[in-house]
Length: 631
Image (cartoon, rainbow, N blue to C red; front, top):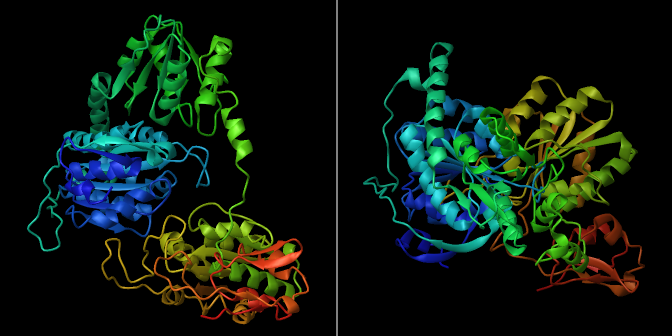
């Protein structure tokens, strides 16, 4: 499909879309004017697509420096009467939460939707937290699509709901919903045309401090208004078509309550095993539809709650049973029927049902060994840095500097961050000892520097430095902390797909933009030692690290070299092996660990299809067995 069809497609047309692409179509149909994000998997494709289509769709779009800024851009747009959209991965909600919580108090004038993509089983995340807690913490509605059509429809509906009650709305997806593909029928597009030369529509902010300035004198009334909205919305959830009973003509002895991707597994297990159970699918899951759930539970003996990740609906269901004085046994995570962690699949759900129903001997479909067989067929491969990655040279260089300074590995603590460079945890680099969140390597460096006499080295990417590394660096300077911070500037936000950041001269819509200098920022923070180096020059790398480790302050080394995956990047000819000089010392394999170099039948082999021509291996080899390739 041509992506521009997401803009030009008309109502009734059908397309085969990724879940994240369906979200973009929902945004376009809703007539959104402003959208902002910080890239994070599994939501990244939404931003990638919007960056291409924003101008055609009359949308202002930006990759903000972090999720909090993106939330604030969207909130102020909505306060100005525009429809705004912000989206992020689940842990991005932590960054945005400070402003998000108060946005619920102040409310909005134009529709504001927040899509949070959860990651059950931590496919690309440091935790698998459940966004539905944020809906309850802030008291804002949450919608949970289970397929691509619902993603598009719920995103669009969320804007209407938001404007009706002047409240932000969360759309919660999961990795499986974000990355599934399905047929999506388009609806009509709401006009958001503008006469402005910069395409997107402009709003107007009508001042009202009692609504938008949460000083104590106003915030108390804001909280009262928020709860009034919640009670009104709860009436809608109990009648909503998004909360639907899927009838399998069961005898009503057993039932299932489910939502999002977990519903798909429950549906398949019930259908393909011919189980006598109906399912209540909650697409509009908060405010929790107590009346709808109580009606479904009426007459049931037992009910299964199938949800990812935490037992949130299960607790709400138990509260409903207690308040309505129902006599229904609940099976879920709390009683051990289903696991308390990781994503579900048909095997997990079937196993949970079978603990109570004992149906497996008569099952029409046997799920029991499908995943086990699949895992046996697929070899396990640890993720590695790409051939030619500039980060590899930095890890090699810092370890060599540590060795030349006479230090032992245990003498240095490595504080790492969120990005490709987290792969420094792997041998032979072993350069990741502690990590918490985006930007934490700098704050962790501060903490370790006052907590231990060990040397401290931190690693952070360019995009992550802009995201949340600047404030802790100021803290380090002011409090006289001592550590070496490596800013790995590979000229892109690499791990999430190559999005721009303030360190390159292009913005989120592909236009020229001022490039913000990491070097100047570090100097402005007060750092006395700031060096910009070429990571592919190993002599320079080792020398700079040795200097930095000898200092007693916060030293910053900026490694500046482009990610090897940047499109259009000219690659050098692959390195050549001089077999007559090779004594099979294995240094290039065991210490550099480039995937383009391997040992086959006792001999070193260069994979020319992978080799990027970075020539770092040539500098590692002491015997002249490797030489630069020629055009």
